[in-house]
Image 1 (cartoon, one colour):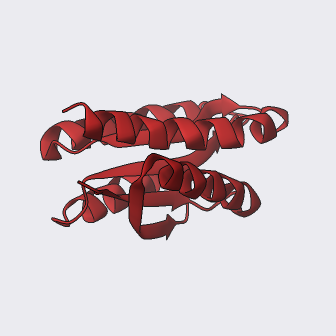
Image 2 (tube, helix red, strand yellow; image 1 turned 90 degrees about the vertical axis):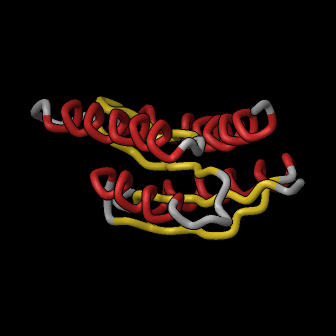
Image 3 (cartoon, helix red, strand yellow; image 1 turned 120 degrees about the horizontal axis):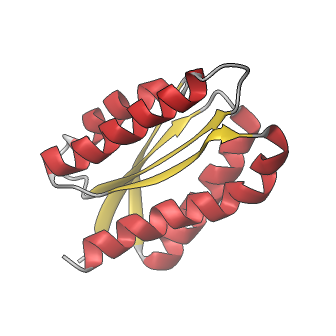
Length: 135
């Protein structure tokens, strides 16, 4: 049976998200997943709410969440990363639907971002696929 997923993208890093989206769509197609919705949000803090909104739709089996939380001058990014990832984990358990997390960081340096865009997007979609096909 064809599994239907959504993508939620934190588009603060617009060009980088275009690369991640392209990779996520490519690997989803390769794995036989149908992406039925793509939602863009301003930044990482908006990912959990948007993820929940998408997952509440009956036709959505799972979700890949993509974003970047850069290292800043303070610990804000680290705190934000913990909050976002914790919320996404709790959401999976609440709704019993898998979320593949392709959020770079927190604490990632700008120079580290380009090499990680495609691998993290790919890993997020592969994680959703694995969880949906090994239930």
